Amino acid sequence: MALDRDTPLNSLGFAKSPAETRVVVAMSGGVDSSVVAAHLASEGYDVVGVTLQLYDHGAALAKKGACCAGVDIHDARRVAEDLGFPHYVLDYENIFRDAVIDEFADSYLAGATPVPCIRCNERVKFKDLLETARDLDADCMATGHYIQRKMGAHGPELHSATDAARDQSYFLFSTTPEQLDYLRFPLGHLPSKQATRELAAQYGLQVADKPDSQDICFVPNGNYASVIEKLRPGAAEPGEIVHTDGRVLGRHDGVIHYTIGQRRGLGIGGLEEPLYVVRLDVDQHRVIVGPKDMLATRRVPLREINWLGDEALTSRAEWPVMVKVRSTRPPRDAVLRPLSETEAEVELLTPEEGVSPGQACVFYAPEGSRVLGGGWIWRGY
Image 1 (cartoon, rainbow, N blue to C red):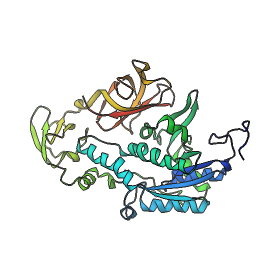
Image 2: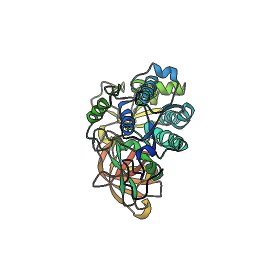
Image 3: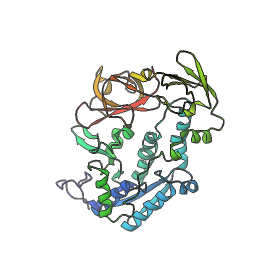
Image 4: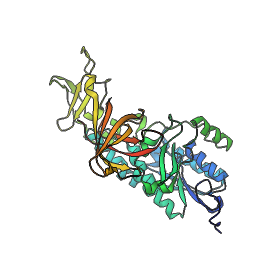
């Protein structure tokens, strides 16, 4: 029986007891999501664990260091068994291939530098899995992401994690207000990953010392090119390495082996000046190289914007913001100028190097930790 309206909210924000609150926990088999499940179970919530099988299980069993490998599915199941809550493994291979892997391959072949983890959160975990959680009559879905959900004057807001070194806001910028209303992120306030591991030990989890995943789950050892060649046989066509002044400096085995800003491994040694990849001409199969100062970018065109501000994006001609153009870089001062509800241009007050189509540009409030959304960089200047 539900409690009356004067009942204080539980830790997940519902005016009823934990035992009457069902929460689906997205479990990858790693320490983070396992701690979330254990913590919620210890508080008395009706926990249901769900793990996604995203690619061939047989191949996954032999692969370590990725979030959805077969061993991780086993670890997630074992945590659920030890803690006594139900756990389901869902076959999302077709969804994952169609929504994430195919676009990754096509974007890379088009000369972009895609971020498939963002698309996975957007199109799989926070879309299809979230709907599955609703089908299971869950009140909310919890994940082990390092990001915070805070209640503001206009509803739930997205905020970066307390631990800047673990913050995953760059990868979650496309979370919509409707999704944010349903999601919970119990780890976002923790001061460090060590604090998470201490909780894992406290709950007696066998994954307490399990190493963090490093790779994109379907890209072994970070070798993007080998994955592309497997997905799109014959797609890597050789061509020329050309200086911005027109000189042909050498040959390459396919533009998929290069990224904007790359310096090492160009195969054009013996030159006096250090050269960097400044552009990929996919149509002509050319890798364009030039001096480092040619990498500096001040204007960044964006599309597919997800806006999380309280006012409409187009309600102002420009917004002072902080932005990240790469997940590993700190936010920098910028001005956001909307062109429509889903398109804009960002002007970086200090030019950034290596801004690449296919990457995300994520917006933060000038002060504080709030995430205001973001968009996809779709071409260079």
